[in-house]
Image (cartoon, rainbow, N blue to C red; front, side, top):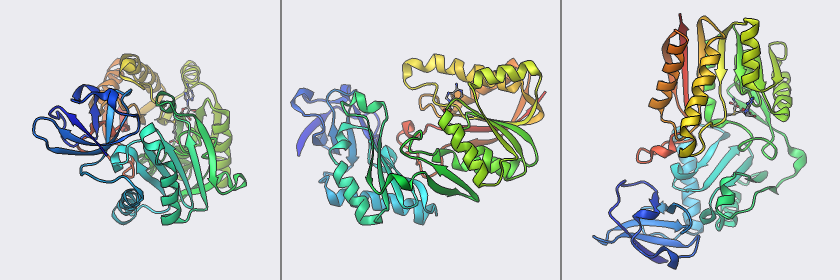
Length: 388
Ligand SMILES: C[S@@+](CC[C@H](N)C(=O)[O-])C[C@H]1O[C@@H](n2cnc3c(N)ncnc32)[C@H](O)[C@@H]1O
């Protein structure tokens, strides 16, 4: 293992070491090499990680020790992640098993859908361990199906190809049928967004489900209808809107298998156009769920993204009845919870509305947040009661 030296760290226990923090000639290192990191001044060991000299985040740590990154390392790491989800959180069958930095495995995501495991590898440093990761999953879980869903655009920046393939099992087993609380969902990891399902909103969906009964609402950016189905099972009627044909098809199928087709309608449309039509028609709803894709994907997009969230939420507020419920989310990692609260506050002020913040949710607990790395927190979900 090669040694690399760094300047005194500004953020202890962060797993990211930036290019300007390194005090060794980066050009001497090959992309993906495993390095042991030392602080130059004190010769103190910082940890073991992989290097990408071309990336601004040049080192991602895998351990705070001088440790061999081998089969035993991956087995122990995955077993630790499993123990946290199943023994500590009491999550069963379907959950995010590995969440990258948050599980000290930067660049690796593994979602478990019962007997099917979906792997996403985000960095070249992690890509070299792909066969080892698959072997480790085989050993621990003996899965029926393993899918590689390597389609995140960040892979291109790392010089990695985009690929989606079944490593184990057969395509005819898709779509999968999974459970969340008392609802069933059909998902297709190969064709769907992310690894097939937005597991990160689970706790927020279940919170809202307990809050609202017999109302008429909108599920904006509905994807496969996960919020709609839970709420429809509580006697609510909903219209879900998404611009993806495939998502709408699966959402309708999900409504059917949960026997709530009567209560759920899904429309393929651009949400912004839909809202404007509804405002024109003077429609009002008891509750509205707003769960858009990330508007801010990099720091440079931040100002435009803030405007996007403000415009969207300002428009949505025009469609809510007095005393109505707004469940609004942002999954942009570059927008903090405080910033999101300010944006929503501005949208309320613009509409001369007041609100009670009933729930300030974040990502589900199987997507842990590292105290020392605020970057691992990305999801905000605010549930508000709206007054004139
Ligand atoms: C974060 S996902 C929604 C997740 C979903 N609410 C859930 O919990 O399963 C965002 C969704 O917005 C859809 N989408 C993106 N831009 C859109 C637009 N302008 N109008 C309608 N849908 C859009 C995508 O197809 C995607 O399904």
